[in-house]
Length: 339
Ligand code: SAM
Ligand code: DTB
Ligand code: SF4
Image (tube, rainbow, N blue to C red; front, side):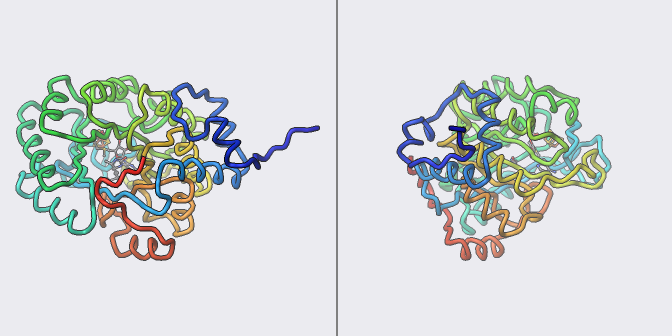
């Protein structure tokens, strides 16, 4: 008898086959086969995995703050903050610690449980580290989880951040190794993996994902996710951004990714990294309620809240509250990890 294309099997059969178990030996062919399943089968499978490890109706809320904006020496083709592109963004210097703490307190009042501070740097300068460390200590003292994204780190930087009590470090691999050099020329994919390994070796949690809709192929998206899933430990957070096409950047006219293809990538991330938070990140202002709802169904369980990301717009708390109301979703409580 010809093998059925669909995967209608009882939940127990799936569990016995190992779905939902963290693996680190994914092949591209395996990942591609899952990615290309009939859409209903893919989403069903992702939702089953999701329910093994998470409350399906809870969403973790993170908030971003740009602590140092613009003038970045890197040439990332998507970024408003690169000094190489004419995006019209005004550069500013590193924010005062007090101001960061005021912003963090406000974000906490509005429901954020994780505070992510980002700087437009290739890597931090020694002279900035004391200020950065004071930000981590101050935000952590409020009871918020802390995350920083500062570019490449030396062993010394990693040690200082760990000592300060930083919970997460965000460092995205952005796309496949093959496509990386088409988007960024000022550093390599290997540089990215090196910093991720330093952060992991120091015992901090890892946040790493990428951007979809930069003109990459489905294979690039799959390879990016296979790279993340085959790290020795899965990143605890996997942000999946949809490109925000910024005028003046090389990617301003990149072909948009279709919602269904975006959802397929979210589902694949959920299935291959079953215990990770998959964050529906940049690009939500351009997404319909229906696309976002499919992302949540496919296993996305974290978002950035508030009206701004680093420099670009985000739906804002009222819009998110409305959508959560329609979908019966609720923000996750602090320290609510249920797996
Ligand atoms: N400079 C640091 C770095 O590159 O690691 C930290 C800040 S950087 C803005 C953080 C991440 O934001 C990037 O790795 C990228 O994945 C994402 N990002 C930047 N610009 C974006 C855009 N226009 N659309 C979607 N994601 C974007
Ligand atoms: C991530 O993956 N996305 C966030 C966060 N990590 C640092 C940043 C999104 C930036 C979107 C463009 C902007 O605001 O400039
Ligand atoms: Fe700089 Fe980060 Fe933007 Fe690249 S993504 S230009 S490193 S701020």
